[in-house]
Image (cartoon, rainbow, N blue to C red; front, side, top):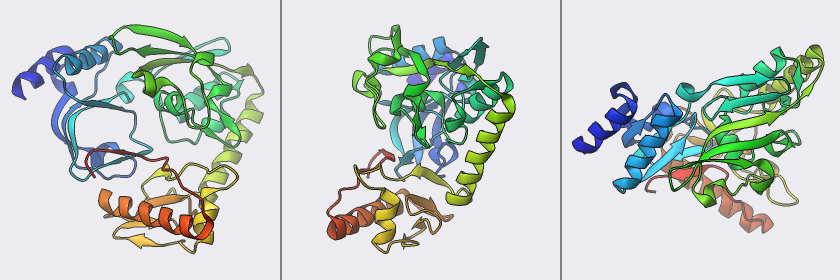
Length: 302
């Protein structure tokens, strides 16, 4: 381990590589045991070098942004967590295009678009994630998705080469792209927006913010929507109709404000959340014959 840590530190810098890093500090759920290794590189080149070293030494690795949409095991992660977040969050506006590094927060991109009078990204202003993760899962809200504004991504391939891929080749669908299937890592993205009225853009963003604050349990840590939307249904309504509003296991609870969210009431473990999700799925299946598919990704040993 010591030799591997030294190699990684030489590649990314001593201040960017950590051992036994608690994942509670890097997920929006505020849950998770320690990762064997944790890397937060400051350049695209050093990120690529970290990945090369992991592959060369057969070290499992997983890429995260700000840790939304993620549940990490209480036992942690046996391998390396590669965080592409604040250290890789540059945003450049060129006319009606915005070029962003993978770690840029969607809310920050939306604010920059507003400053330049660009419309089309308002829907993403309240999504608590990075552009890298948003491209991978074709994130969306209020009837809009990344595929509406994304024109291309630059990825690191499994051969450790940089590849620019047009958005139309990513097979973007509901919470889906081919990026995970190909083993690609998003490093940069390009968006195409339109000129708009700043005050109207600001009004839309404020309106969407009010909707989120009034309807979502933002006062508690969570990973966002817990389950994907089943075709022809809404997960939150199915869970509510199953009588599960406020139902809890340990410190994990079905939100009383929005049943589509499982929240951490303060001391929830990953096992609490996993058990609660399983019980919710079973109850909905029994009562309505609908299979709920997790939107939250589980990492580590459960």
